[in-house]
Image (cartoon, rainbow, N blue to C red; front, side):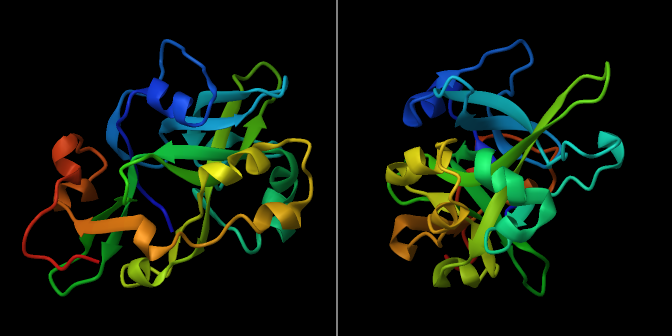
Length: 230
């Protein structure tokens, strides 16, 4: 699964990486090393005019049909293998695909002394593009809610020692096909969602301070000694 990630680079860096227009507003997300569910994060998607845009959306999907966002289920992850068949995600797989550009994400390993957090990043240090789905909720005069969920796939052998699932990470070469709103072949879109090769990722243990979503700072992604590297 993916329950926490790191998005500390300047938004312009992500916008340039995915060749998107940066949507700026007064309450845009600040750089963060510990992005948790139910907070806003930068997401790239296709705009109505066909161009790409980088926008801040809420992490935890609120479906357009929900009566009340406060009572919605708000899934933060969706299984890529079944997303096309589930009512909540089926239409989104056709027209509301997105990517979440991140510097890395966290996963935890079970140990006798408690859960040990690991930070996973790309081997070359470039942003990772987590495949996702987004939706827009609107009722009457209430403020609209735009939100997203991250798609997951089976973990590669390196990540499997931590968890049996991992985010579906897209290569830049697959970005255009994934974000193409005119491409409604869900099977073709699903074919892009596969485990990232082991050699493309680096995973190492980090401070347990990341366990609390209240903690922030660059020290959260620094390696710590005394734990095995995944």
